[in-house]
Length: 278
Figure 1 (cartoon, rainbow, N blue to C red):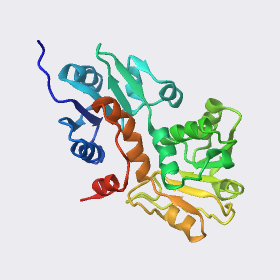
Figure 2: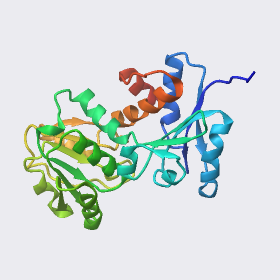
Figure 3: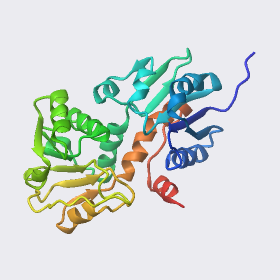
Figure 4: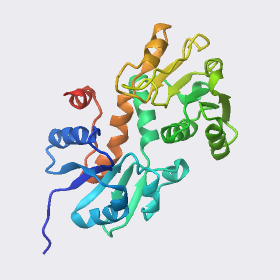
């Protein structure tokens, strides 16, 4: 006979105190009456590989991966999803019963589901998309937009070469735009996305004009602290639809929770309130 124990999951990062994931998953565990645990795991860089390989032996069913390990974890995984391989990073690990480690990236899924929830008539197919930034989050979002049928994705990044590298990775539907021409690149764009940290609490604002944006365009920001970033406020001031970034965090968590705890969780206003509560 083997001793059973409550299912375990968690989030691995360095540092980890800032993560909202324990609050998010903890709400779902209580809501569905699941006798499991989701814990923050601060793992130093020198211990990362060994720690990940040890977690399945300790009864963990999987973990989320956050800064600074989203790329490094691909070197530890035994199997990698197609989207994680394309994006070049993973945020979700599933530990198989045979001890194997499966790595996935659900950031793009979370981004798309957030827009579908709060702008139900939105479609990536409706026209060109403008993505500001070319970091890891941008890669996940660009991949999701292309998969969802975006006819063109324009990328503006302060370091042009990083945007060029994304065009080389994703192909003909990518257009590279100079950072100082970002406002011009809004012309005709139906989806405008800030993937930079500009506008986050404690960071400089993202100064960009929406005057050339299409009147029916949607603007969204992956930053969720504050919820209404200056970027979103500026977009709303000229009548554009806006969607804040918190829903991306909430939706990206759902696939992992479903795998670890055998329950499809609901992303709703109750969850938002729980995560935002002090």
